Length: 116
Image (tube, rainbow, N blue to C red; front, side):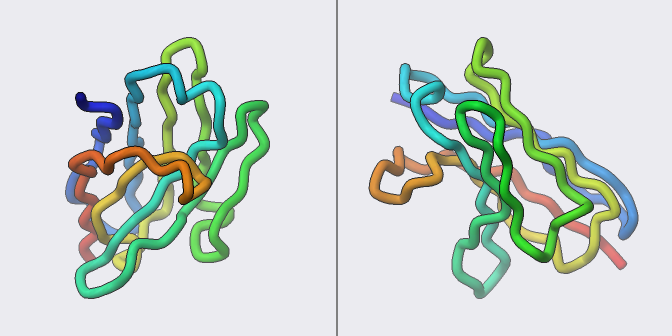
């Protein structure tokens, strides 16, 4: 059963923008804080941003001021607006519950490639 589907990635030049979407199936989405993670080649998966049920947000220092996370609980969807992209933002982006003890099976992710 597919539970998390990410989309919206692509290849952009440095300084460009992308908007990622994460659609969750099942009834867990509205219960938990959700998060975006990314994994660059040869590196561990890292948390990029999270949004609580009520909308409170957190960001990794590397993306503060450039990325904006949001969620639509009625649509079981989370978004990540990424502006002023940098080559260091390149990686596969995934969504999941923020609390790793509650992680659902990972989706396919969506690839973001930023060229310099």
